[in-house]
Amino acid sequence: MFERYREGVSTPVSSNPVNARDLDVVVGGTNDAAVERVSAALAPRLASPGVRPPALLIAPDSAPGEPERIAERIRHLPGDVEVIVRTSGSTSGLGRLVGLTARQLLSSAQATLTRLAPGPDADAARPATLADARAALRPGEGAQWVTSLPTHHIAGLQVLTRALVADTAPVVADFPHGFDPQILAACVRAAPAHRPRYLSLVPTQLDTLVQPDHRDAARALAERLDAILVGGAALAPSIAARAAALHLPIRRTYGMSETGGGCVYDGVPLPGVRLTILEPDHEGVGRIQITGPMVVPAYLDEEAQTRHTEPRRDRQAPHSAPDQAPSEPGDTPALAESRPTAWPASEHADATITTSDLGVLSDGILTVLGRADDVIISGGVNVSPTRVEHALAERGLDAVVVGVPDEHWGQLLTVVLPPADAKSTPTGAPVGGEAPAKACAPDDLHALTRSRPRAAPRTLGEVRALCADLPAAERPRALVRLGDLPTRGPGKIDRRALAHLAATELNAGRGEVRGAQR
Image 1 (cartoon, rainbow, N blue to C red):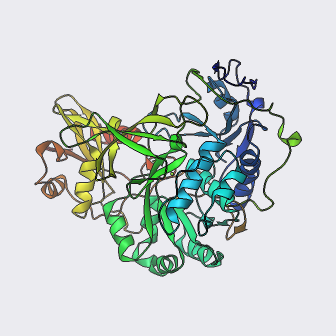
Image 2: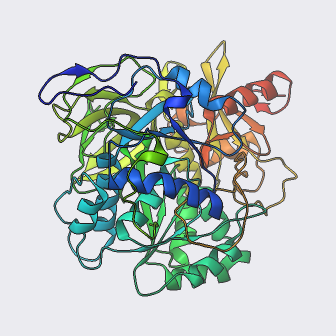
Image 3: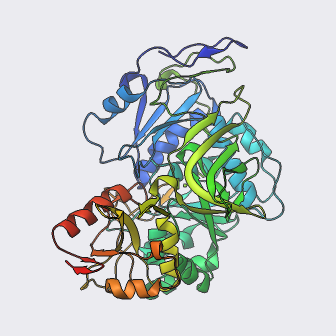
């Protein structure tokens, strides 16, 4: 099924059906064994691209037959794809299939290491192989990673890629009973100190870390880490403020599976990344368009298009491929499902995608305002739930806002809060991922469920009073109380499922609606 390409000839990327036997299925997870498995699959594919079948990463709790079902969805498979991951599908309900090449993975890793290192950014590198990426490293750009993210998601996968480029073995932080800041602190203390030390977290983990009962662990991280990347979902202002007060070296990241992970750090694009705001409104808000060497030009589960690619060797079964992996393998908004808008003229050109996210650029700094398809139309007015959530957070209330179908308003702006009797000691969702090496605790990743934001229960009237200075359309008209929120991927709220739950509560007479107590 792997098609050979002729140099300089434009040809369809594939024409034959894909079978699961054509893929190297690799089970991800968060523990040491998972990190070893994924790293062992990743390293040779980065060292010698074009030799082995693509590695399909799946979750450890995947249902039987999942690889076969994924293979059936693939409509085209470019010959240079090395790894296949699935997006979170936070609004569609079904994650898209993203095929990543060695150049895309390595370009992202190289740009991240350059950005995190002291001094100015280097020019964008577009390494074709692991050896190229290592050769391009400048002094100080090597790093030691501590990993706790799922290796079958892009954020965890990219930690492994960065570790491989830095030629270091990451410390694996695994949590048998959910995210544990004390275990994480012990792993950070165990990390070698002769290189910069980096960690990737999702906001739910950071939220737990900055709580008063974990301040000793937070101080340990603040003293020993050079950077903590936080991405995969929006970071609430209240959590960011508590992290800043604890002097945690937070770097906010924005990206997605389709960009090989984070491609914008603290609002500034990584080397080689170019941002455009499409059709901005009077406030400069529009869809975010991203161009760069790490951008994936199309989903695998959509019809093939035509492009140029350089010649490559026939791929062989994994056991017969030459093993040029390094002797010591080691080291996300992802945020939105996106559409490719420009195909590169060759493998060496950059691709462009138009994301499903709204944002604004000011003096070169990107502010992400949420997904375009999350916009709630209430009374004929477009309302960004993220904007309302940020306004509530600035007033001390962490909440989630969704749109519930309503005959009068079209969509009823609904705020979701924890139960009135909820305890104020939730724990972060178990998340994890990164490369092999030293494990601090064993376990595997199961379904992720996000704990509710901590906030004192409030009535709808009290919530609306907090929003008195907002436009009328941005003041919630309904309130429901729920426990754990549904999620997809590492820490992302499943707004589609949450809106359904909120509608069910309101239809059952539970909750509040302005003008009527339910």
